[in-house]
Length: 232
Ligand code: OAD
Image: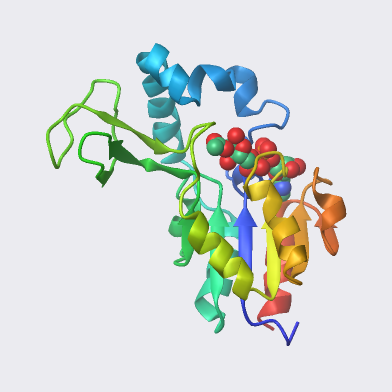
């Protein structure tokens, strides 16, 4: 690994699973309790805002009780020690990477702990409810929505992500099923750019065949083991 200088890491729901946050597509996963089209689209929000706000209020409250696990801590250690470029691109809307201590984190699907005012376009830190239509702390309009990317909306900061991939020597995908684009396409982008690719996941995913190497196991085991190799 000595020739590796710049790293892009993509994380998905699997890295937070052992912290007690349901994955999206696993048994007992989120979408089995709530149909995705009932909660995670702009159309659903227009049709039934109370349902959507209630759902995200519940999730926002729940994640605040969860704790980062050994995989989050290991990535934070890598972030702190790695001298080259490093970017943790997460599809997760929880804040467990940050609470684990990671600094170089990009939330491409938004964040539970932020509210987006669609009147003044400002995003504010948010821990409480949105269901009772609180005023925006900046413009006072009662037009706050969860700052999460819904199906059919554009993920955040794609230019930065593709820029980091172009500079990368290694792309690592952790705990993601490879079912949702554009994140699912990063491994293909990386391969086309000649970047080494590694997958760490509980089981083989839809994209496994595209990676140079796949290591299977729970994130709390395989991620610390990989980080130990990188910073030895
Ligand atoms: P998924 O639920 O689709 O996939 C979770 C992945 O984590 C699966 O491949 C599991 O095998 C793996 N996994 C489960 N437990 C694990 C563990 N303990 N250790 C390691 N891996 C484990 O979640 P995502 O791939 O993150 O988008 O889903 C991608 C996007 O789809 C989400 O960000 C969300 C959803 O729709 C939006 O909300 C826009």
